[in-house]
Amino acid sequence: WALSDIIGTKHGIGVENLQGSGKIAGETSRSYDEIFTLSYVTGRSVGIGAYLVRLGQRVIQMKQGPIILTGFSALNKLLGR
Image 1 (spheres, rainbow, N blue to C red):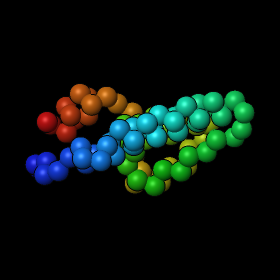
Image 2 (image 1 turned 135 degrees about the vertical axis):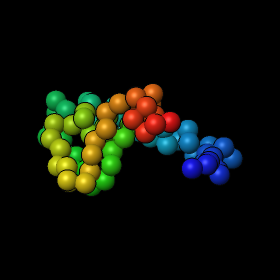
Image 3 (image 1 turned 90 degrees about the horizontal axis):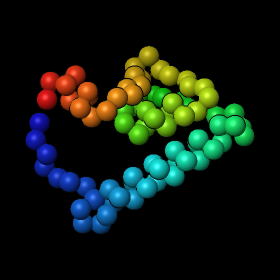
Image 4 (image 1 turned 120 degrees about the vertical axis):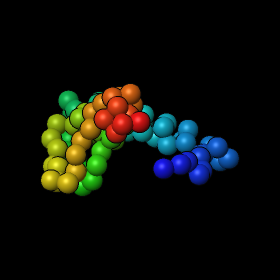
């Protein structure tokens, strides 16, 4: 596999996505004590997506929807890169 494009270098979409994920994480964390929180995982969840799922109280997870809570170095080792 080879990288052919980097999304966000021209229009800043990468930074906006990271900021949005941070806002979602903050709201999910704050709402944990205030309301019932539920996440529904239908596909592979890695990185910030996996951590967002973990911040909630309950998770509905499909069989083919693994949640991988790990750092990039462990994930690269697992993938043999």
